[in-house]
Image 1: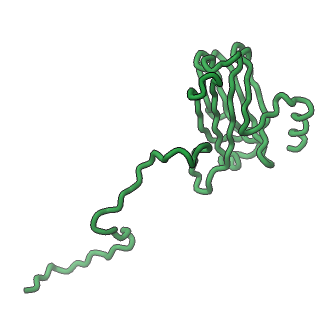
Image 2 (image 1 turned 90 degrees about the vertical axis):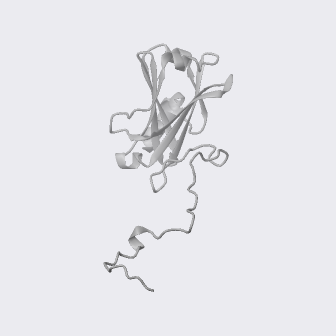
Image 3 (image 1 turned 120 degrees about the vertical axis):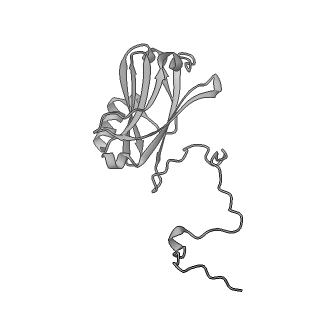
Length: 180
């Protein structure tokens, strides 16, 4: 892997991309069918950002240079935006796939929609990578502390809490006895 990183840095520096940084794709890249591959590095893990332009659509996905088991531990976010319109943004969350498997479905933009994000004939985008929680839950990668959660919280029940079913007393088969 170190040789691969060294090769990209020495021979293809334009295809070494940083994570959590702004990148620009020339508008001419959207006008012809092609596949671009960028190397992303997070610590000792190496990823490939695949940008495919085919049939007038743009497809972006991230793959881990490693096993399927390790790839499932990572999530990514792609943001495509126009600098002139900061509030307008295309946002995609996805699960990384391994380089050994076919490229998993990722961000898919129609050609006309992708062209609407062009600013000075450049398409700006950012890639964010994060390791998943041990539970496998996927959390938002950005602004988690600033944005309020949209999930409804469960209100406590009236009259006290019930015991979990496993701790409830079993039903006793005794006839109902009245006491006078």
